[in-house]
Length: 135
Image (cartoon, rainbow, N blue to C red; front, top):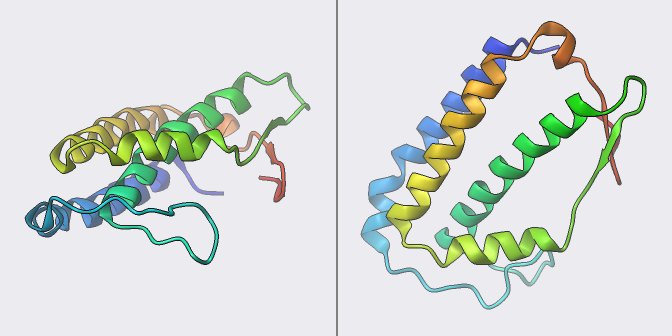
């Protein structure tokens, strides 16, 4: 089991790696928007889709963590993929690159604070993913 400190360290490392690419991504702007950014093999994601997805899933996972913690004891919160997730990615990918990075950073800061405050008991709460089972 990872500690809250380990989760924060992983989040910080991921954010640092993404932030390190910021100047290169911004230098390439404006990026085209992909015509197909779903989960099929034909999909192609440019930086706006990747950054839009990162912004979407950080917010989504923060909500899943809170829902799992709020679920009655012994009853895992059920979650999974949703077609509405692509709506979030689509909305985010249309933001200017600098705004997307700011959105991601704000969500990282909020998630970092949330993770740092989790107790050992909260770290072992179980949720149930629709296709991957208990996690």
